[in-house]
Image (cartoon, rainbow, N blue to C red; front, top):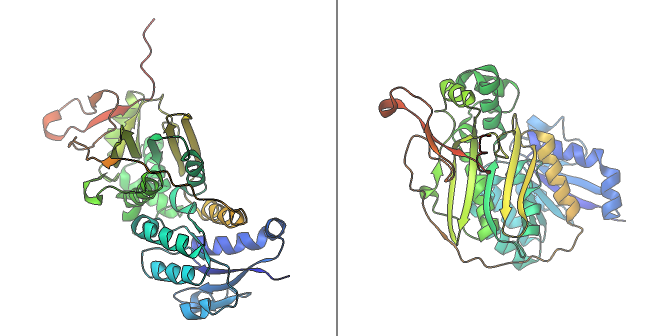
Amino acid sequence: MTAVKIGLIGYGTVGSAVGRTIRSHQENLQTIFGKEVQVAGVLVRDKQKYAGQVTDALLTDEAAELFAIEKLDVIIEASVGIEPAFSYLSEAIHRGCHIITANKELIASRGAELKRLAKQKGVRLEYEAAVAGGVPVIGTLKQLLHINRVVKVEAILNGTSNFILTEMADKGLIFEDALRLAQEAGFAEADPANDVDGWDAFYKLMVLSDLLFEAQPDWEKVTRRGIRSVSAQDIQEAAGRGWKIKHVATLENAGGEVTASVEPVVLSADHPLYSVDGVDNAVCIEGDLVGKLKLQGPGAGALPTASAIVEDLANLVHKRKEVVVKREIRFTEKKEKVPFVHLPTGETVSIHAESVESNGHFYRVASRAPAKAEA
């Protein structure tokens, strides 16, 4: 009985967790596949760095050596950046390998090309881990796309930013101190720009746009704001009114006109994202038939991401027919241009009562339910 042979690209935090998970859950995987599931090779940039960690598989810094493995079935890509990952995955698809990736920047930038190539070659491209860690948003949306028309997605997609805003709110910290805590806990990189400037959430939103509409807006015209400019005073003023400031990614489809944004937003207590704290991610989906759904779970950390990757691996045994439903949409740019641009629902308020014209931060309160009338 031959094994399912896996090539693993990248052996950092996520890649090593995938390797450990495949070994620790081997019995379950063998039940699903009916044979051993084996990491046959690991491609890294620095062999010496991982020589003591990878002892039961080929360890190489040459892609040609990885692809020379006989009867390689699956490539799992757990690196960062567009290149050389795109070239590696294109080569793997040409060789008939199924692809699983957690690389949100790659899927946002070149995912459409990889999907077309995978379809031509009759292999699968799976990327559940690229959007919300352990939260199964991709699989859920794929199930909704057959008949439902998704009219809105509101999401917290970056666990690092959510952790920082939660620490600022709970402990009264300034941004810099909360960021340092995130770095000490391993949630933020030494260079946190990708997270706190909104790029990570932006890439994930573009992945969702491709999935929902088979198209993306012009990246230059999408509102993208990070959390560096959210002050402790902003958070305290909001808290005094019963609100929280969260970093929210939004896609809204109004009669075929779609707007996209990633920005700090004030949420009132009745909004479903209000209670999403710490490193959790959450995605609120509104479909014209299903109504409103909320998915929530850990969005940062090695194991949640590894979980999504290994679930994608397990799902390869199911023969799934890709259903393509053509959506007639066009992307439009949000019109509001104030310090924080906000969701297009609820009232507009000034957090700072004094000096509003010079330095006041205006927010729009995102509320899913109408205000209750006073008795």
